[in-house]
Length: 374
Figure (tube, rainbow, N blue to C red):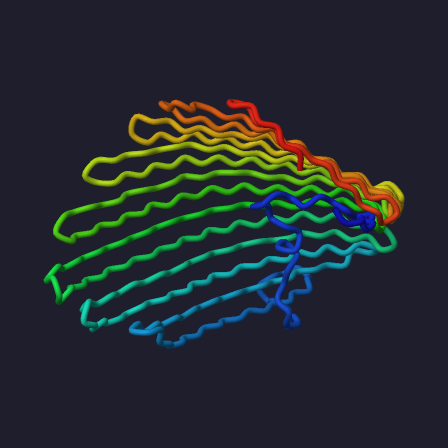
């Protein structure tokens, strides 16, 4: 492990994957707002509006395949503001719609293969977000934000081929559909510049369905799908140059199934969670993280299960010293089997003092017992 660098006082541990980052809630178009007054609003508000419509189409060739790619993106932003003495109220509303399409068409003529291919892939997304801000001159601010997003994906492929040498024909078809929805919120209260409380949350859910068929003298077919949901949150308290404390949490779960015709069916479920707590006090920094996951799968008459638990800690004092330790326990089992299970325990410890690092670690296994130093 390398030496530590001092985190800024506003340090907040990053929310786990899937959470709505602050940059996403605050990000805006790079172009300047065109100031104008909306006559439809009777109140004496300042109104700024901007929008864009981008589209494009491109052609390319990849071997025997011709590729067409296109996209369409529409964005709109409205900002309403009002000065109330020493206070200013701002409402920022954003909307966007986007779509991308890719098609592939190809014809193959070789001594070992004659065939044609057609494939399409598309993505559609709709996003809407808003942010309300109240600012007090010479004091702090209160901000509340909200964002929702809906995304749909699809892909399809059809291919027909013939082997002139054997006269064997093949017809393959694949189809995939997916949908995902997410919602995120952001709140902050800063009574003084550099001092405040920040909270953000995110929830998401989605699913996908895949199908594949193949005819080549026989018949095989695949059908699979998955449903997934999760949430995450982050909370932080900032004391300016003195200290900062933050915590994050995330959980997710998934259920899945798959089948292969004539008859081969499997299914499974999985769950995972991550937590983190950290902060800074003067030159000192600290971070503790934990993660757990579990998975259970069924295939025919067999069961496969796995799980793990990991905890790590990180402490540092500026450029003087730092220490980091991790401990992981994992379990895996298969039934029915002559080797039904295995448990593994591992750990590491890294210490750096005045730029001089040292490392030690171990791995211990059970069923059967193994011990190894790393």
